[in-house]
Length: 230
View 1 (tube, rainbow, N blue to C red):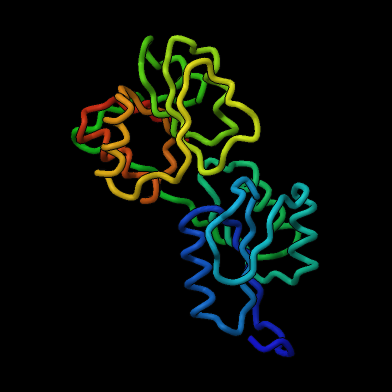
View 2: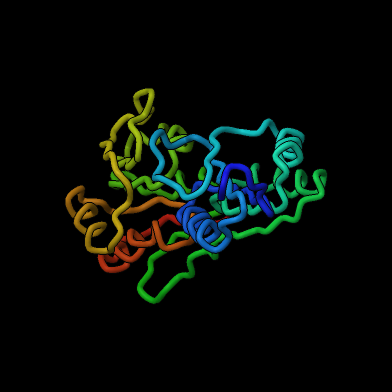
């Protein structure tokens, strides 16, 4: 869009997911006259490149988001955040009402249990922690902000995979740290599970294709998955 041309519409995507990135790409291509902005929480130090504009960081609660919508002239708000990002999703509903901006919610469909899946289904991370049997070797597939909850399980070996190195040493008594993104195929995830002699996986039912390969790998290997529901 030329610098002297006003956008016909301004769309703000609350992102941080693969689906949000794909949506930004689609909108930039389909609406060259529009202004497409993706907002990231800023937890990942070097996020993958995104089409359109990118802003990073919080808004300052409901009022801050509503103010941003008004001041930026946002005409449409799309919530494409992680299904467990409950606070920003709740804020988006109220801020959209305050600013009088239409809200489009794009929440991933949860994974459905398939034949061969061995899921231990729980409702909270605390229940997930307590469901791990002694002397297990666990792939802890959770965000860094949830790791400390498992520090009391000194009878378990944890394998933690993170995109960015932790700013502080992980508060886990027995663990191995792997840096990198999840494997994109079941074969890649299977190799990781075998290499680390994993006996269990702990994860949240985030849905989507990006993180599903580990679930398929667990199915192939017959490994239990402690699955935290939404």
